Length: 434
Ligand code: FIX
Ligand code: ZN
Image (cartoon, rainbow, N blue to C red; front, side, top):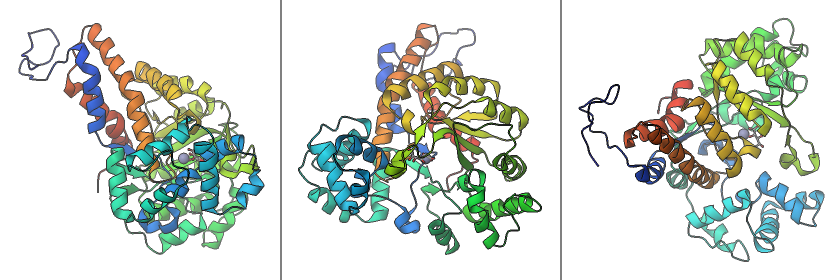
């Protein structure tokens, strides 16, 4: 309905031909705008094709995802030790049999696999994986990536790149061909959380560092970061931190954080991503699936934001109990950008809760979600679910705005959705499409 606005104080310019929506129209327009906007996925564990086998895709990888392994060990009589003796395809067969044949695939992660199979018109209730395997085997990777990103409504994904991972290091040193859809991130867990076990790798590459991070170590770590910045052109630097993370605290990790990493981020104009709240390997027997969550003391974050006002902090917290605090801190510190509903938070009931309070407290000044995809095709269901969960939340927020006396237009909704899923990331990461 195109109308010329009646002159109202502080309202849209008379000349505006923006389409004012009836309240009843809002849900379909929100759905349409969410579906029509390509998102930027700010945190994944995906790799561009030139990283070879580091990039996971296809049905066997989808089924042996650690989220599904955790669920498998709850329903199967197999022990983890027996499971790890199986080949990848035998593991995938066991998970399919247990979670998709003998049980109803009703959990978030199992439903995800069903959604991917449906997206490629593959059987979702077959007794085995034969048809799915031959389908994925027949895909040409580059064309498959384009198709998957199109279905997922994603234009760009940000990888997680570990400069101390031997396989990845070799790939970068052999020269990585840039891919327009994949961007790098400098992940620093080994430096900031496991220095004693990893300083030797830097030393072996000629950086004058030592176990105590003394002497030239800080300057040499900065040289290391600047060398990898030139090699990777990362969107940000990142680290995941345990629920026990404290700042200030006299530790090697905090020394390297404050004296090397944060100054380098300022110098290179990069945000630092802090993903806080993991309890690593509470059950090592189930490997990647063995991490858990703990409530963190977010005063550490408060102290970092206040002490380093010139640094930008991209933050995601793993514990449900920390979500509200993070929202409040974001109202206090404009150098803090909350992003995503990370890992165990990435379930519709919790995404709904987190996103509603973020809209109520932060307006459009946050990044609602990231996929954390480890397998290429996961972006299909993770972003499909995000659009499905956010549509009623956004619609309700606009309905409240209209009821309170401000009409809503399609242009408003498009501007806001673009900001949430592109603009905030682009401005915080100096991200320009290449
Ligand atoms: O630290 C991280 O980036 C986490 O996302 C991963 O370690 C975790 O295993 C994961 O896949 C979560 O979705
Ligand atoms: Zn991750």
